[in-house]
Length: 449
Ligand code: FHN
Image 1 (cartoon, rainbow, N blue to C red):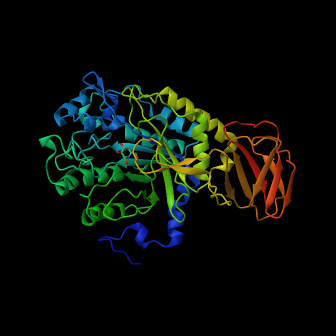
Image 2 (cartoon, rainbow, N blue to C red; image 1 turned 135 degrees about the vertical axis):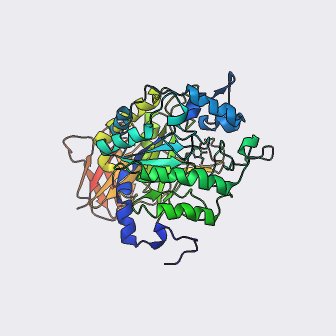
Image 3 (cartoon, protein in one colour; image 1 turned 180 degrees about the vertical axis):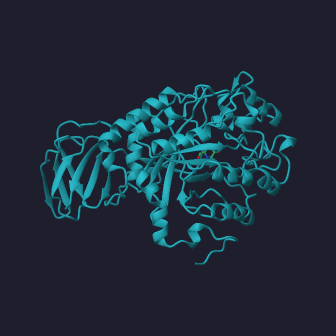
């Protein structure tokens, strides 16, 4: 194996078969829960009585809150309504197969019991509990995978922690307390905390470390020190946001579904339900259940996973607008999960959308691929699933199947009554009922064996 990395990572040294085995559960999963929860839930988007523009977990940066003032928020953080069992049960009811929670976001506050740094939920708040421990144990009990998001690079409350220089008018830092040496920060905070996260949650050890987001401070040499640690946990999956030239396991498009997915790479779209990751009391701009189900079908049709975010509040409650939508997605998946979990991408290449530069979404500024909600396909050996996202009427015309269709039926029809169709060459004409069984996504199964 050849690798230009100072320390080869698991992806550099494993065989394709070993990789397939390591990624197997993740590729089956298709749908996970992202949780952005931290001190920023206390101000909830407001500072000194005024709303602060931007995403909730960036309030420290956007309002240029001095480190000492931000740290004072910890004394007000007492999420007594937090219920690990209920959160994991909600993820399961939604049909999600894994949970990734912010162990430490860019603000530098650790949501776990950390001996490496006192700015953490056990030492600095009246709550004194480790919610990540409780969640890890519950996830293990309820049989769902669990992982940690960790902001290894940006840390706005530690001396030497990086901050992005977002534009010409701001330097990366706004408080003298942030000045320091990045390598020192890494050696005294980030790496020791990553060690804690990897070691202290037995038997519910994390399955994923979700890094976010490298700056130029993360040199290949520094990143390789983290890789040395990751290499001690051979089953771990980690994303492409470590930095230092490491590609990791997964591509991580944010707030959009890529036009063609990433053929040959594992990938996962992360997305908010409203317009913020961390809780903002004023943001109730929730996407519809229909849009979320369509997005899941879109992602699956390109062979990816959807990591859908919730932003619990400072009491430890997942906003009702988010929980309700998750329940509704779960209801759809109860009937239609076969067309999502463990499926492969569409056998019918072609575009279902267009690029737009005007689309405004959180986090990214590049042109976005804007989906058309016509139909999508997913597949597994012997079966093709046609996801009808907009009802085509009583006739559906499909160009493309290269194999003889043996039977067609609606997945949501408990009888699986056969649908009439004609197939001539690579053209299939399907007769459908006048109305969809489910306006969100009615799935037609085409059996090919
Ligand atoms: O800056 C963060 C943001 O707050 C959020 O955590 C997202 C989630 O993918 N990641 C970063 C931006 O890429």
